[in-house]
Amino acid sequence: MVGIMEDKKYNIKDAKMLPPLVLAYIGDSVFELFIREKLVSSGIRNVHKLHVNAITYVRAKSQSFMVHELADILTPDEQEIVRRGRNANTHTHPKNADISDYRYATGFESLIGYLYLTNQTERMSHILERSFELMNKEKGFNEH
Image (tube, rainbow, N blue to C red; front, side, top):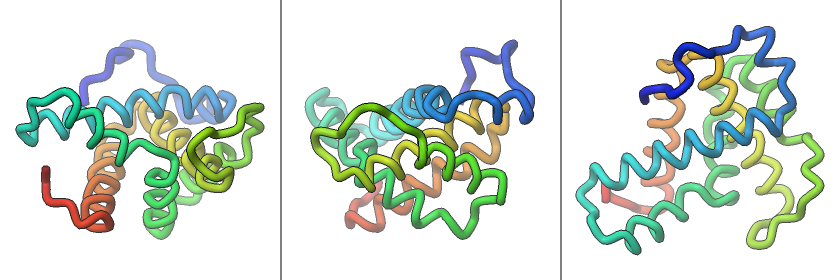
């Protein structure tokens, strides 16, 4: 995934100092773009179908599932980023998700944001691709 901020990446120490919700803010956008690119490249051309399919992946319940399934392949640093994101005080209450899924989804998004901002693109791509595969397997999807 081509980074818009290629000239402005963070070193690991500085990225760890960012509030976890800032990491999640970036991670949410990166993950959404990844999913949209996957769906468009699958051949879907109807915008409504693209939107409906994207929701399946980006909703809190799905992201919570993904981060739980990926737990055993995450490094200790990555697990710490997820934990910080999960424990962040969001001051909001999810409308269409339970609070536990919402918190774990924030942890997942924090991890993606952290990997993106620290330019760990190979690792980020591995986690994103694995997440996509896990969701397809869980939901019985084919590669749309």
